[in-house]
Image 1 (cartoon, rainbow, N blue to C red):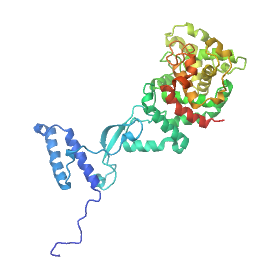
Image 2 (spheres, helix red, strand yellow; image 1 turned 135 degrees about the vertical axis):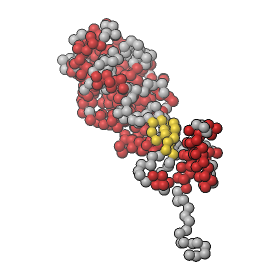
Image 3 (tube, helix red, strand yellow; image 1 turned 180 degrees about the horizontal axis):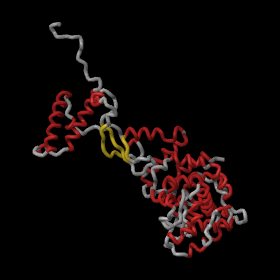
Image 4 (cartoon, rainbow, N blue to C red; image 1 turned 180 degrees about the vertical axis):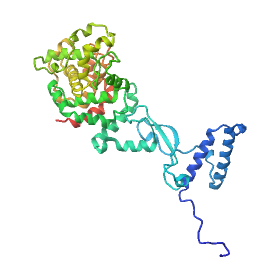
Length: 402
């Protein structure tokens, strides 16, 4: 053997020093979470002392003391709209190769956990790497869908929309809703034509309801067939029965006849007395009278029919030359429905969701008057609900243009 004990196997440096540092950071973080070493008589104190001993040896070998500075986290949650850092996590080993295999890979050992309470991501708390993968997958590779999905996330995160209620279930991702709209495209086109409203508006209203105003209570009410809210709002259209009655009354004034599309709706025989009855009628007393109507709302065609009817009831005052309630059914329009922009449709959805004083049922909290409703874009600008609806309406115009 040579005098210098050179066996030909030169000492090699760690090819992945960053991963060794990450392991040291993880160990230091565990120590920082433990009670002081002054509690040595307790089991946790002895564990802390053991951890500290291993840490001191490793820190000496690496020449780094990570406890002397803030621990670096892998991944910046704030790169994505609405997402915030919540905590950090260890990356799981994932196989039986264990710790040494982890040190020989480039994957981070410590990763940020990101959190967002207002997102269409099915999980509002995810590791940073999962957040990146989800963001890149939005739209299933369809550029128009990807743009819309990301604009929706930006809108949900905007300070200007935080007062808008966000009722959402994880299943209703943007891709799910867009697929539902595409699957019902023919029905939407047909119903919109019957009620003389833009199909993009009908599709946008339904999509916004599914994305922003369909909670776990709504889902339970629909699945169990029980009117938990006492409004007879069922299905994806989620229109309160009082609103639907007013919409039918209006439509019968502007376009009545034996072939009216309102005849497709299975109205309860005492429907017209609803507004004169106390709103707190027990659910069981309404069930059998409204069962057929409820079941109709639960179908895709029923939801599209109701959304189209209510859309017509809201389009007419928006485009009318009149501002007096009683004159609107007989007044001319300032322009045709084909000229409605995404911004116009966002205003209309604001009325669909929150109402118009003197036009909608009592207790509406949306637009203060029909005039305010008509002049929103010129005088007031989009409200919080409208700003959430805008990216959805833009997308629907691309799907139903012409």
